[in-house]
Image 1 (cartoon, rainbow, N blue to C red):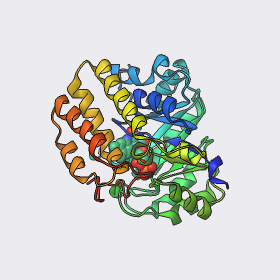
Image 2 (cartoon, rainbow, N blue to C red; image 1 turned 180 degrees about the horizontal axis):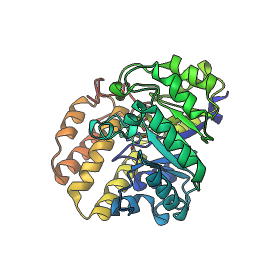
Image 3 (cartoon, protein in one colour; image 1 turned 180 degrees about the vertical axis):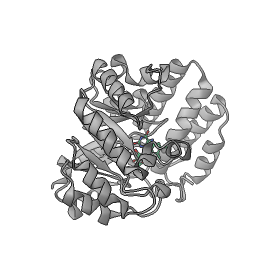
Image 4 (tube, rainbow, N blue to C red; image 1 turned 90 degrees about the vertical axis):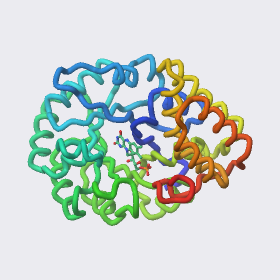
Length: 331
Ligand SMILES: Cc1cc2nc3c(=O)[nH]c(=O)nc-3n(C[C@H](O)[C@H](O)[C@H](O)COP(=O)(O)O)c2cc1C
């Protein structure tokens, strides 16, 4: 298909794609069809934490197409979370079956749920008999072995999943190394639910190559690529690359917004460090600054460094790759 008309969803990135990011990105750059929130984990008392409320509140999400993501292995907690999402005005809820973090998987959640296919089947059985909103699922292709994916797809196919978002890596691969495009092709072949691709799409060339290989896929999800180049999707729709002034306004809007929201400049600087881990890849020769940014300890250091980046570095028209931490710029 013509890549300009691809549907593009922005991936959840814990600590980065906050409500403030989503609002700022949507109004400044656009090009996104839907944003997914980073996961929230229901607690057994069934209360939304202050952090959850900040991210999910109608005021902070008004006018921005957003899908909240939930991470749990308990059907009753998922059902409760879906009701909260509905009451807050959302129209779909997403289940996280991909988080690779050891503390999460040890509890059988995120990618850890993939190790227990029978429990996952029982979970879906309860969820889909009662859930008040359409459910999409974001999954990896297995925990230890690609062979696990066949059984997982059989389970997914038993339920009316609205959208199956596939990040074709195993748990132990985290976000690095080659994606398993053959496993993705298998999912495309046999999934009853519409399949969305997610993983390593960073440039317009990546999107073109992907579309040529998988012309039947009309929706992709992009995470790090949009953080590294916030204008990526505007360019996809035929618009301009980001300018230096625009990026400066963007990072200042985020930084000042976080300062106001948290009341601590240090916390705001911490949030911005995580964004810059990817965004520095849109500048030529940014290694020195990337290294310094990782060591930033307070707001003054952050402000000094950000000013230096905009003063000293040439802006590129597309981000350096890879964004997985093995590359030159974002180690
Ligand atoms: C820092 C970071 C935080 C992430 N947080 C989440 C999350 O909250 N929920 C989720 O489903 N995936 C999360 N992911 C995975 C991304 O959504 C996405 O699947 C992954 O980055 C691959 O896509 P990309 O190559 O387009 O970035 C996270 C990834 C990173 C690097």
